[in-house]
Length: 132
Image (cartoon, rainbow, N blue to C red; front, top):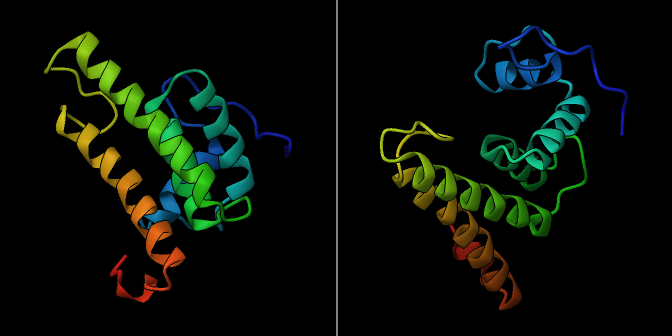
């Protein structure tokens, strides 16, 4: 993996992640450091972060910082959904978790279903029917 940038100050995201998330939101002034962000998201996902696992899946699905891999993306989305569900179950409905309340777990599973549907339709040569 690429050498990581210096750690962020307490309570802030590491610099490569700030760059990627800033660029995705349109506020980034520098080009995003996808390789560095991929490294940090991987580290966060390994530590049990649902946000890290989801972001890693997103980057693999889009081919940002690594070769595009729907298989790896699906694996990380599943992990994010499992972590989100566990977080919601352990901390109750008031827990913000990854994206908000329990319904966010359903959105993560929808990302998994989308990838599986795309793969299935591609197998039958009908992937042009998908709007996603």
